[in-house]
Image 1 (cartoon, rainbow, N blue to C red):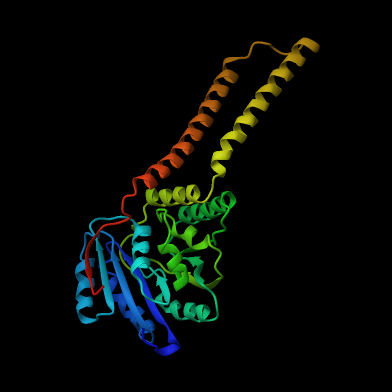
Image 2: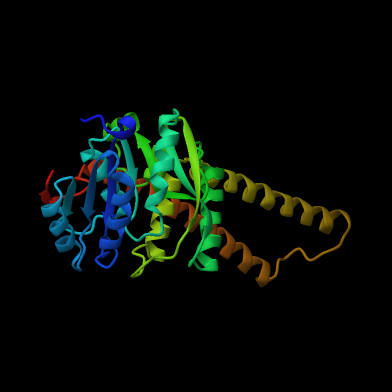
Length: 314
């Protein structure tokens, strides 16, 4: 590795899924910032169906520091990021999306924080332009819920735009579990962190690949991977429902036999409510158990996290 300006070899990891209209502009902005360092840009083509792969290859031919890893199909954003971490050679590794919602101009400030001693530098959003009220509310709810349930604290209002030190990458590469929620895995070891702040822009072109279904799946993966509290919830609910039932029986018995009040035989409404309530609780708990079992099942299968179709300049 060369020693250039600020003595930093920088890896820029860029997951790409149908971003052909953004890649040119992204590279123009990113290269203005990172050309002062010794750098590599690793694009991970996560099964794009547009011209993204073709455009990246054309830049690979012009600049050998620009690299491409193409998957055989879409394996998901987290797997694309993980592939970038596995192949990155830099001392400092920045992950960023190509949609230009996260500004490449922030990278220099991240490197300054890293050189000051932080091992993980998060880009924290102060504002999120172009996002719906529903998206903002559900994002807040997700971070509150996962931090309430999890033993690992995950910073709020941060995504996957971050800088991590080489040591953090080596830790990630040695993991034996599937990296389905990297935000949690990065936070778990307790490396020294710092923040840079920014206002998140709208997407430059195109639509987000993170559908509601994918966001729910990411949230479930995060909660299940970093907390066993939902499993304990079934025990607590069982105790609560049992105590509530005992209380009702004692209360109605005293009311009827001691004070001669009330109707001993319950009506259909209370019976219907009890059955529906208990049935709902049971289904929720079975669903939670199923989620944990499904995660065990996937871990036991030991299938690869992704399959590479082609590599350029790697």
